[in-house]
Length: 235
Image 1 (cartoon, rainbow, N blue to C red):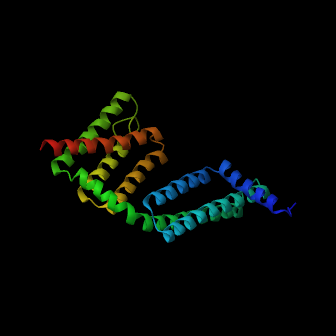
Image 2 (image 1 turned 90 degrees about the vertical axis):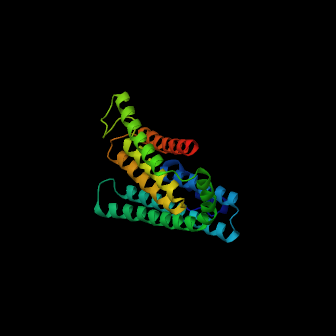
Image 3 (image 1 turned 45 degrees about the horizontal axis):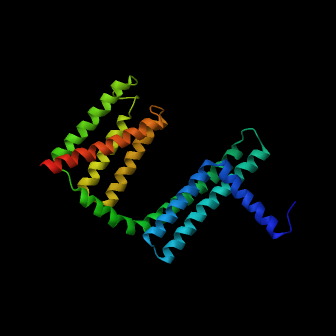
């Protein structure tokens, strides 16, 4: 029954938000990202208009996820069997979440990049640009380290499976080298995105575990940074 009291209606709305956060992993992730973005915006001291745009984008993503949860609940209530229309309803609802996330990402990038990119460029300038020899040597060391770790773990082959993910290590090593050589924030962001996609493919193909991919990415990044800095210090 529909409540006539405002406080009861408010409690029902809060229950709905809590239910979505409790049962939907994506909703919890959206809340975590939203909190991180808002804290970052406060730290960077964005303008009031920019903060409002970020808040609206975040609210729209959370709204779309709530609607997606509601549609899934209604469809499951109507039928527990597979039906093409039920699939369409759920797919369209999920698609609305995707579109809202894309819009929020574009808004966040356009606003936050003007604050973050200058700081990022200063950091890259402090690290410096590696020489060609340092880049080649660091990449070779990453490959050798990945093969040796696979051999020591006794699982997988040098090209597939085992600890660590060689694809993730090499991908993040290359992304690090591109970042240091270009000293450009946007180029760095795009190459890191490609490295993440390569690493994620190892999970989708069930070749590596999440732990193996994370350790591989970290190894590629850290080894490349250490080797390039050693070349810089001793040259």
